[in-house]
Length: 290
Image 1 (cartoon, rainbow, N blue to C red):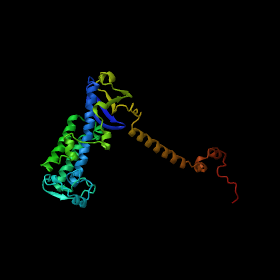
Image 2: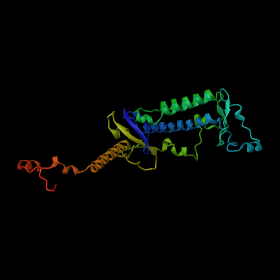
Image 3: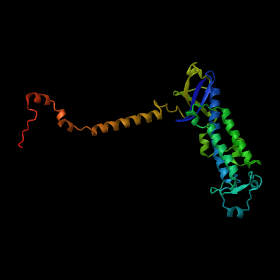
């Protein structure tokens, strides 16, 4: 199996194993699905964190309004009575004005928080350091875990306009958000290796050969952005170690310079003519008056 270290820009994303005979078309689709799937998991995790703290999403026409404005406009959150968390709720006002403030109990809150951490760990970038591969099955497992936790806490479901529900139903609207800039649509995706674009009409073996034990760094990006920057000759960690070594070496040389004291040359044992004077019997002659 060929091991792919997938990056976006200079940032590691995940490791993926594939066959050298895989077409670049299929490989691009798989890499893009995993890449976008991981982004979806992180978006849902961020929203579940706020769900655990402040309850369900307010209707769009009530978001950002004060209590007085809501009362004056006679607006009502019809889903607040339907979407009650298991075990009751605890009021915790959302200062941003996006959620209704009826947060789950502490026990249910911990269910959501713990699941979020598990889902993040499953598709974390730290898996690269642990040399663990990520596949689409793991992304789906993370999504299923999050979906299950939300169903446990909110058995009646979430409002149709809640971003968590919309994410699960693939109806999310990311237009005008920073998240939209991160997503790479599959038709616009390109894979690059060694400053070469991997053409979709070719196979992976056309670029890396038939050695199935090859490991390469592949970069994913949108079309039209040109060739990504080349990988540095040495890694950041190696650069840090080199700088640390040179710093220690400079400190050692500085200490040696500070200790370069030649006063010892005036000592009797350092006199190169001491033996000659001893043979001539003039060793202890002193020239100053007593």
